[in-house]
Image (cartoon, rainbow, N blue to C red; front, top):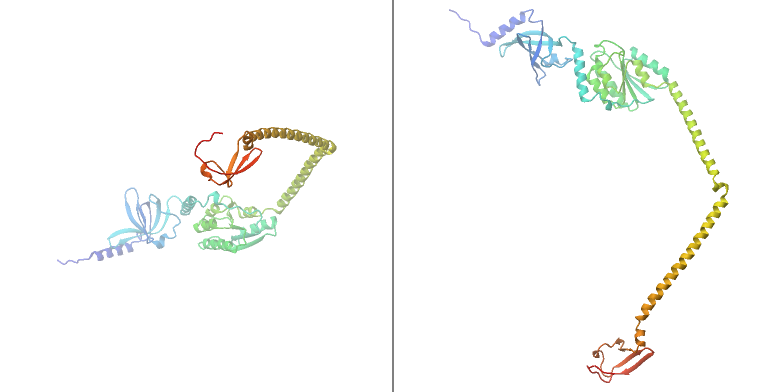
Length: 404
């Protein structure tokens, strides 16, 4: 019996060729729920598609998933297009996804909601980050299509409201795949110039696909990071894009964006007239207030009869002078009495008083003799009494009491 033996690789290739020749398996739309999703560092996506009863392994390579407009999550129901083939290394078949969209909801709408939620969490839409719009910008930069209806509407409003405002138009695509990068470059260019006070990013109405460049993350971040205030005027009043949320001010239409950017010249003139009237009234009221103060002061006695004020002051001076004189006499009398008391005390303690009572002071060579040891026989001594002095010489000295 003849047997033909195959290797595993050969049989897997054979089965792969069978799958490749099958019309259905090579152009297949599947719907199911995502599970076991894994986005590999290589960029490829691996997951399982399942329904209530079955499951199939699936892969979406980086080249196919790089343009997905939404983020894949476990539990998401999708519709996927691709083909089924054999993964020869393991001998398993899997679904190779080439394109995918959410089931039951548009892919663009889902991408819009996901990006909006992401940027909102980062704070790109927060009110505290909004920059103030200048009252009357000198130069306005407009990023839009130079041939669209939006730029015609904007220029018409500007010419009507304030014709001498300087406007710089930065041409850009406003729909299609190349639009978002061009819009970003336009915003960056206007920021680098250094002479632009306000930026308007605008385009006319359209479908969600037409407006999609203004829902791109790079455009939203360029608007948020702009150092120059940005007004968005995109689509119609009911159209809301991610750029609208990131802008410092959202206008419902391009025309409204121009109106918000430029104050009416007539309105400014009217405001200036009102301010002039208020200023003149304020000056008149202030002058009247000070006139009444001057009149009130002029009626005071100090101005009507100044001599009375002087006489009162003169009388007060005389009164103070008398008080000063009396206080000085009283003080001097008190000091004289104190002086007499102190002088009496000093006089009672004076050595002269002691001498007058019969005492004397004897000294030798300028020092008072307090002991017999202070002198020697033959020394010249000096004795002071109350009415003069006596000079004598020591004949002898004895250490005993002498009776007089």
